[in-house]
Image (cartoon, rainbow, N blue to C red):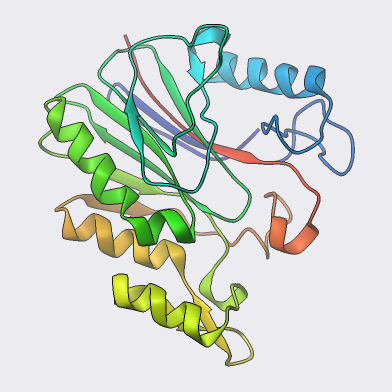
Length: 240
């Protein structure tokens, strides 16, 4: 179920793998995305299994309606029947609430200040990185009392595998110079995770970067590699 998992005091951090779920091909098998065409029963079964594995009731494992923006929402409990908000970051100071960010090439970012009791989960694609979602997420955490924030950056498509037009690379580099790179074949490329890490450092956030390229590692879902595929998740939860 997990590609990587760790416990830091009361904080559980994890990135899921694609194995260990109920979904059929091409979403096999631990697809957590409800918007990709997978059977809703399978997705719900997978989400329930994940909630159990991180030690929370299913209704306290919260997902977003991600939209490649830079809005971060503070939450304190389960959603109502209307479902989650259209945002790309969630932050909470409520123990026992697990926050999840879905990805299949974008960069999942998990943040915590265990002493202050504040955690956050962020979906950072290229648009979100360029729109400064990392800066917004750290600011929201500090509004809730966080002071010593630590981040874990999960696996995503690496810069060598993310070829883009030269003008798009230039646009990204104008915002975050560290994101500009070249592909395996020497063409213009963007390293979103490197840009995210640079933004975290600019906010005085300590960073652990979990290695792995979604396009290169079959244990992870990758839209650039497969097209129609599932989503894995970064999940963070503060124990009660």
